[in-house]
Amino acid sequence: MNLDNPDSNVPSTDANTSVRRTFLKRASAGAVIASIPGRSAWATSNGSIAASGHGSNFDQGDCTKLLGVTSFNNDNYRGMSFKHVFGGKPFDKHGNRGDDDFTFGQIFDAYNSNNNSNSNKNKRGINSVNVSMVVMYLNAINHDNGSGVFYPVLELHHNSKSVFASFLYNSAKNNAASTGITLNKTISEYSGFSSC
Image (cartoon, rainbow, N blue to C red):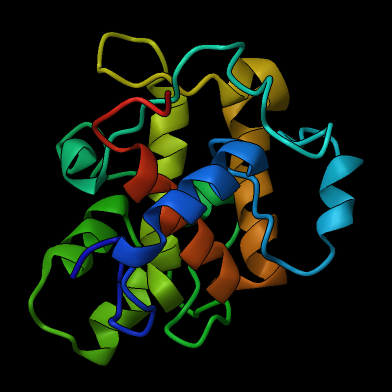
């Protein structure tokens, strides 16, 4: 399993790489969830990355660089509670808010597991939305700290990590499946190399 095709229910993106890259650059090189209903609301919502309708000025002309899930699966983050960070319980395999809270470590373990049990699917969430939300959040809080991440979403658009976490969670509340797909594509597109 990979973030590019998390549950094998999203078509392979190899044929669409160029189109996706163009779309993502225009959308905001990061966390704008352009595919969910009510896209016009992003233009006026507090903290929107795409305030102008595109992301040409998102990163002040620098290149967006993200790390993937394997870069963050370490003791620094494994004990963090999804609910504590995002303000609500993780999403289940159907896109509903689940009954249980999970640590980031439990979500990472479910992502890395070859076991496709219902328990692991619920920890990952529909289209690995829980995994991708955690990864985007960790990229944001690790921006420009020597880790190789350049993702200035907090300082440019969301003012704090809690505001950004709420932004991600509210996006998933509106449509967890689309949020998962969009964040997965964003992570795949910008992990390990520059957006330029």
